[in-house]
Image 1 (cartoon, rainbow, N blue to C red):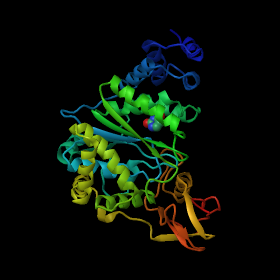
Image 2: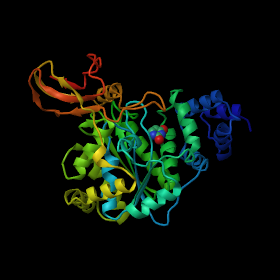
Image 3: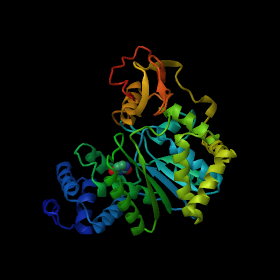
Image 4: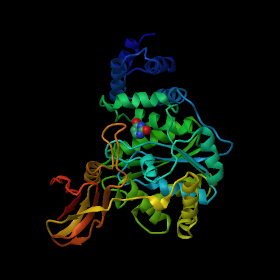
Length: 406
Ligand code: URA
């Protein structure tokens, strides 16, 4: 077997066996296959696709490349393909925990315009995010929630391949996205998984067609590994919540957990209900009633507090910047759009995200949107507060394009 024949086979759109995929991908991890050879294979896969059998085999190769988690009970997990103002995890996990449904999740940091749950939780002073396997299991037993920053040992092959995909225009291959996501979810040990596929200008998946396709791949891979997967497709043309920025998003999640009804509330209830209905084997409508009640009667908020405190976090110390720039309208009219992409870019510029891996971020900065689509505004009216670390920040016209007013 040699790598050139394998690349050539995929270039000609032929089927690759488990052995051939393993030779190429495990060889890449062990550095017997070069970057340029794997890049060529990834591009051939991106252009010609993978069959269901190839995708299952690749997912297995990914999973087997590192350590896996298993539990003595069935647990839930949720995943989002990445959005702006996506704080859903911080609301869904406590809803489930309050209903005695265990949830175990490995989370990542944000890169580029989409924030990561790990960064959001790190904006809570003292919160311990890197858990050992023992601490992870302990938190699951004590709090019904285990959340840790993804270890280097969990699917190391995906980490290596993802970094290469990022710089070779091969991130958008649906079977590669599906096997990347599902390998990490299956290796994390969940039995019930909900995947929120973000679709729109601020997301990796831009069209509904691709979102539907990805949804099918994710559920099919789940069936292949005996894991129940449900997906939802949510629009990412607009931010998911009114806060964009790490500490601001934590504070908004707390408001929702205390019963405030916002856009973040409805999507969180939707995700939580899918998991509740799978776990308890009850109709979705009944699951929705339970999820909604846990937000109204404070039980989700209490579960959140218990979890954060037991991980060493001090919610009273979550800090947003006290330097606030008022973003004002330059014309009167009706707000017709709030752009997720522009919000993400602006938040990144303010310092709430990172352009390169390992870059420092400022947890205290971000955007608080004060108006909704459909609102009428006057000229010179404040439509957003920008929490900044430097009041002299140079805002360009493009930065201010977060609202469209007609
Ligand atoms: N998220 C992942 O984990 N992998 C992808 O390929 C895309 C989004």
